[in-house]
Length: 451
Image (cartoon, rainbow, N blue to C red; front, side):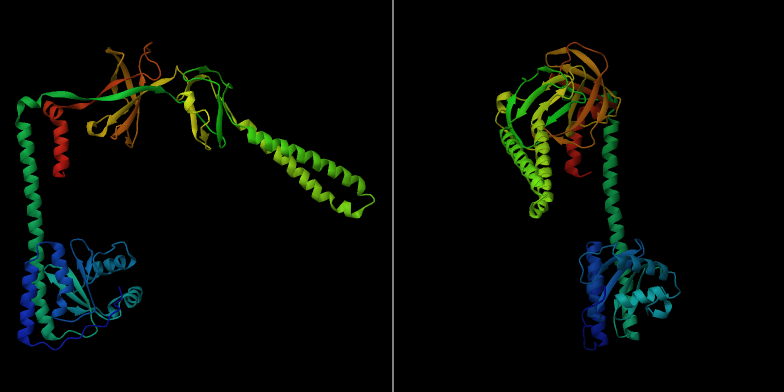
């Protein structure tokens, strides 16, 4: 916070001019409509009375630096702010804390004096902001090379007292506004509670769409980049572990493998010939290491291409049902590494996935019960129990956001099959009839009012 500008120069003011400036600054401070406006006045307008390089404002109620002249915002976590907050928190207990004085390096520890010299190029003048009872409300620090005259100290004393009075008025005004808002909310709550007929207790509930999904399914993903050439199963076919379900186009890899095999054969023949000739030709003997390296590289290429050929085949990791879109949509489609092709699910391991819209959110916990109504048979509800609740909402197909919940069915039911859809009725904590009926309107009112 070292000042980079020279201290402003100012002609000597007469007593009348100085008093007029003090009155103007007092009037401006008392006319401030917010604490931010008051801080700006304290930090930037005092130069009309006494020139300075930099001014800082530190308040007792927060015990931190609130502002600096010429700066819009202060980073409280900056090293300078942390050091100054600690230093001033100790200095407010000194005997001269309620008087205007210059901070002397001799009053500081060696470490603080070193930091002081690093941050400030001029002495700091301590200006206490006092209440009418003489309590310290805050401090204004002026970075100024010239000491204050006795007249300046007297005038600043009057001005600082006015600053303190203005600050107390603004703070009390803010408390009054907060109290009025709180009182209005309590009156509204009292009116609602007084409606006895709507105080009848009942359990919260909400309806949300739900689908039957596989539990712990396996997803077949492309092991390499390629194009789907064959799909050997149809959607919803039962498959067994190890069954071949799809293939990627392997023609390019086959050609590369054939070329690699030819290269291997030629290199091996060339190496054998060089080995035979190395007994009589030293130059051919020197080529042996090079040819052996080429042969090893060719063998490595063959092994790699064979592994890649195996990766062009999609095989089922376990028994289950093949779940994917129409086969015609996949044939000839390019796939990238890791792109999902299909899901293999055990039809006997199913669970319920509920999509609870955020606007219908109620207090729900793991272990809560719900009723599931199939679209094909809504008259026979099926009991389930919530086992997992996502911590983050996800977008749905209709552009809304919903929280996904997973539930397990309590009893077996022949009607429960993968892919079936329906509605889930979830139950929350007990509440009043008023809140049950007006929950959504109250939620929208809360958003509109910003509670």
